[in-house]
Length: 394
Image 1 (cartoon, rainbow, N blue to C red):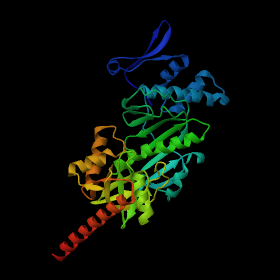
Image 2: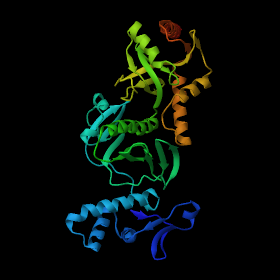
Image 3: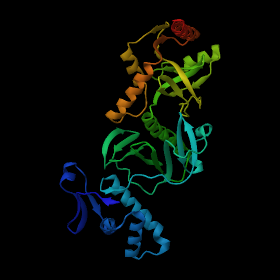
Image 4: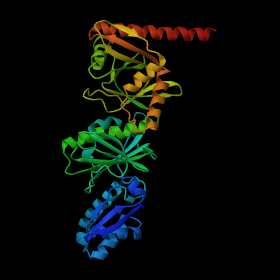
């Protein structure tokens, strides 16, 4: 725990302020008004290696009785968190702590440390044996009064329901429309995400947390070569087939037609995680499925991606190869906060589209649309089988 260089305490009319100097002014860092306790905390920081030592120094200085230490700690943590958020304090990278449950989602291992009442029921089918080295650890902790200011880092995303600030080793994620889900600190390597929530725990928080965990999971998944596509999927001829398109184009309607008339299982009604592993395109089960309540836990070979467009008649059109990649990428909801993240997503989309069947389907919402597409897929698989037989015979 260290003070960030470039901030000095100065008095203005007898009032203490922590002010930027030099490069910090060039970075347009803000100053902070300090009360007597805040000034004392700042002065003690160089003498303490961590927050526990700092708390001991403060308790001794103010002669705080043991029964009041918890209140002092809460006030100290709140002030330190604000210093960190404003870029005035540097602390060691996040480190995982505590126990919890283990899950396998999308072929990746997650360790979730959380109060029992904050574990979404959607995670139950994904419980797995304990992993010694999970791909990601997610911790849910009670808030200690953290500041919700987005300052103190490079603002990457600013929307009504989401703020993402990039710091040196972490991302700070804020959720302005969730009164109880205060923020998340996530390592840039995706191995640890720590959520801070405001007690008491109520039902809206559980839903907000479920979707916030999706965000950090998809960040980590992209680092492992997986891309989330807004789409519905079904299982046919021992392969998964993904139907993608903007909201309202009939993804659920089309897959439900298959299910009704051909008895094909629907794997996920709203979101699918895809990858290309050793040249084989795959689809991976995840718990996030919109309002469909249809999800799958397994991974399956991906036969193809059908890009839907509404039309009174049914017709398939093969996009150019570059357009195929672009169309798939446009249906992705995986985070792309930086150029590097966009590049990763683009690489995954290109690998998948170069390895499976991609077509644009103009279709209506009737049974004939499903019959038409089924015939096209059957024809595609026959051609693949014929090509394989030719290679073997040669």
